[in-house]
Image (cartoon, rainbow, N blue to C red; front, side):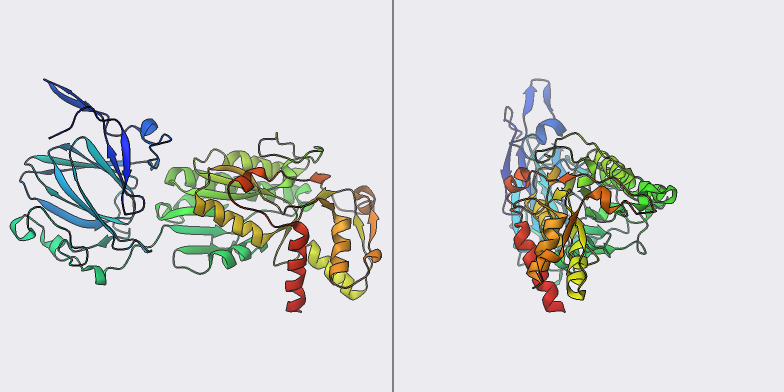
Amino acid sequence: MTVFGKQLSVTSTPIPGLIVLDLPVHGDSRGWFKENWQREKMTAEGIDLPDFGPVQNNISFNDAVGTTRGIHAEPWDKYVSVATGRIFGAWVDLREGDSFGAVFTTELDPSRAIFVPRGVGNSYQTLEPDTAYTYLVNDHWSADATYTFLNLADDTAAIEWPIPLDQVEISAKDLAHPRLAEVVPMPPKRILITGAGGQLGRALRAEFGEQPWIEYAGREDLDLTAADLDGARRWRDYGVIINAAAYTKVDLAETPDGRVDAWAANVGAVAALARIASDNGITLVHVSSDYVFDGSNDDAYTETDALSPLGVYGQTKAAGDALLTTVPRHYVLRTSWVIGDGNNFVRTMASLAERGINPRVVDDQVGRLTFTDDLARGIRHLLETRAPYGIYNLTSSGEPASWFEIARSVFEMTGHDAERVSPVSTQEYFTSSSSPVAPRPSRAVFALGKIVQSGFNPRDAHTGLRDYLGVQRDAR
């Protein structure tokens, strides 16, 4: 019997992500009314139902008591409720992980609903005649999708069906499903990491490792500027895109050809990824730059400061940031002076020191280094802790330094005389250049309070530099 007058509330279950909802049902002598799915209320703080973006509504009508269906796990989320009648529901976690095989059972009537996450097996048995079982899903059915099934009579799950299975109506197909020991677990949604060949891409590979559901794509694997990007993958199978691809040739971006390439990679491709992520419920992670600011701020830049890029590269990165913030599930990480596995300033200074060359290095640009392994760890932290979406500053911590001071530290840490490095102004350094030179922000210092509040503590820049050079010395 339907219970009237409940307050909207949720109850967790032993299966992660499987949530039971008590629904307010309003009734009188004429019948009853309920808001079966109300996005604003059900995704509000305190309810915390995922804003899963349903695209299809299905109804299964069952004439007789004891009609039994399942156990089916599909690669999409379901919001299940009963329009009329009553059911006994059973759910089994068929996802890869520690909770594989966990079971939860309960009864549903019009005043109770349940959110079933992707990969959790769903089944039910009708307890009243003329039962209408309804569910919203956030993907369209596809024969190409990956499905997982479990036998209704599996001994390990040991579901206590109210009506014995040998006395009820079950399809031959459901009777033939495998036992739990034979089930191939459903893998997580796919993670796509673009720019896999770059410094950050290599660090992300080291951090996330090799898994069947993680895809590392370089330019040769996936052209982000292609007109058919929307159809390049079955995007509903992806849960996260980490965009480590970018045009970073700061000075070349000031040339006619470079300007076109910079806008194509940093704006056009980002716009396409933003559209794909928004349409498919994907979390989009994007790496930005200190070049979105002009460097005139004496204080550390916060995530809410107004953008003020100086050159073409900075303008394209700022435009990309603006596009990313339109994606419902997004993380934009603003960083500076990136150092990783590849050609970079620190490696150049270490090489000059070793070869006996005494460099002139600019001393009027101040900031903090960011090491790609720290950046990769920070990205993983935000994803795994499900930190609030938005913009986060992420660089090394500690006292800011000029390029000149960093160069001297590199010489000293590698056992060379730091006095061999001499200071020069940015203007003087580029005076003799015959090629276009991009304007650079004179100060690239970010406030790190927000990322720290999320539970991630960036490594001190000086410690990071020492660690990095130690690795490089061992490699030699």
